[in-house]
Image (cartoon, rainbow, N blue to C red; front, side, top):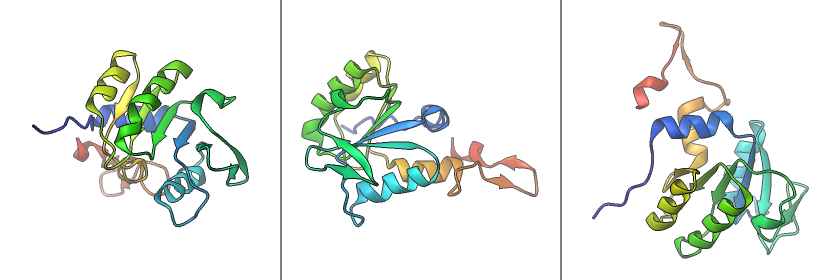
Amino acid sequence: MPTQSFPDPATIRKILGSARTIAVVGLSSKPDRPSNQVARYLRERGYRIVAVNPNEREVFGDPAYPRLSEVPVPIDVVDVFRRSEYVSRIVDEAIAIGARAIWLQIGVVDAEAAARARSAGLDVVMDRCLKVEHARYLGPAGRPEVDSAVGNSDQGALE
């Protein structure tokens, strides 16, 4: 049975357009790690990135926190770079802190936890890369790509 990955384009656009603070669970300070590359990309486009990783003291010069419950600022999106077996607990924490969305990176799948998050009112994207989807929907510079021939965003073609 195929897994529902919650890739709804309207939900993706809503998350990308409204988020300001993104907690990256599993964010590594090592520049060669995918979590670091995605977080750096998002940070360079104006998002506030909060590292959640008990094995890190700081990332990008900012403090890292061992768990979501210890982050002292409101979180819009929880971006998960952990194996699927850890997602259930992370979703419970995201719900408890009042996050607005949970984003499970490519290869991270937990349909039950995703359904629980949606039932709690969180937007959910699963098995998708936040960096890839940001570039697809908003363009690599962080703004909608404009087709100069028609003067419109080409985003509608992605639905």
